[in-house]
Image 1 (tube, one colour):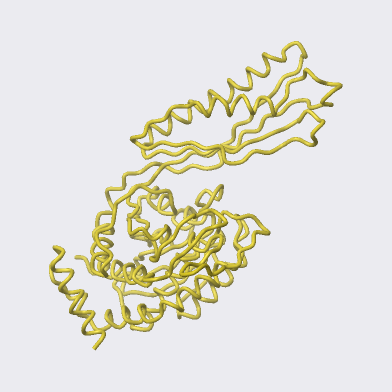
Image 2 (cartoon, helix red, strand yellow; image 1 turned 30 degrees about the horizontal axis):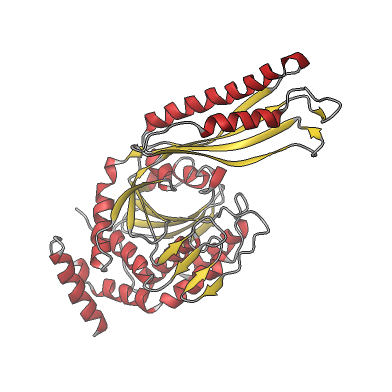
Amino acid sequence: MRSAKRAAILAVFSFGCGFAADNLMTRGDVRQALDFIGAHENAQVALQTKIAEIPAPPFQEQQRAAAIAAEFRRVHLDRVEIDPAGNVLGWRQGASPRALAIAAHLDTVFPPGTDVKVKHAGERLNGPGLVDDSRGLAVIISLAEALDEAHIRTRHSLLFVADVGEEGIGNLRGIKYLVGEGRYSGQIDAFISIDGDGTNCIFHREIGSRRYRVTISGPGGHSFLNFGRVNPAHALGRIIALLANMQVPANPKTTYNVGRIGGGTSVNSIPFEVWFEFDMRSEDEQELVRLEQTFLSLVHRGAAEENGFRAESGTKLTVDAKQIGLRHAIANSNNTPLVEAMTYAAEAVGLGKPVLRAGSTDSNAAASAGIPSITVDGGGGAGNLHSLEEWFAPAGSAKGIEKVLLAILRWDERP
């Protein structure tokens, strides 16, 4: 009765929202999969919690990767492997070897030693990385499990990916490898990333970014005996003050940030080296290029000011601005079928019409390779991502998985 009622409601709902009546919502195997997902919401959240409590600092995703590989095998994915980049891969073979990739990233932003224990706070759960992207990993595993339970067959093969290097200076290395050097790169026809905060949006355009590590070097010395020499830390201060005054447009949205600073040896020593890391982003590629040029100009200007101020000392600073991250801004017009399928699915499960936004996720690497790509959330409520107070509200979160299931099948059955 529950399956029949769900099918009737969703079929009427999809028709009322402007979608033609279709066979998808009347299929018994689809109803079975949707019911399985809805009945296992608690298990999905428990899996998400389990994943979140496995540390996965940047470039140290191996422990979590091993756990995800075991989960892929548990839900009967085929050809499970960890590729040379560190990505975990698993397959559901379709009628065609051409593939739709469904991905979530393994890494978090949190360094080794972070307490990743998930804590209950009323109707919420709190924990670093609990949403970004432990939720995404739980979603792709739960999705594979539901497809297996209902014996659903697809035209396209489905490639499930738990990838490395999405955060920070990982520079999307996992997906870049998958769609570039990986042995399945030529088989992927479309790409869906599960990432985000549960706000029912589709990231259908790619925000570009440039990231730099700037190192300022000098002779160093004793803070009293060698006072008057050029000071890399003082130059760093001059540079950051110049950068903080940069004006950027609100539309297209363009941003910048000094994210990390380091260097020096002791409080009473002139540093011989200091560094900082800088992030620039824009929805427009040309605006990002202009910002990058301004940034580099101000870096050298700030160092020159310190050199000029201490010219009498006969000492001089050197500056090395090294790019450590690159993502292109892309308005990806070739992903319309994915956007339409996901919009259909979100409305069909009762989440309403999704908001279309620009994002900076794993989809950027796939889109840069010419593969139609989108990123969507995995359901539930969420907030304070990338902080120690990251939280997840699990009520109704199963709808996020139902949405992805329907979108995959809708995209797969298109003419």
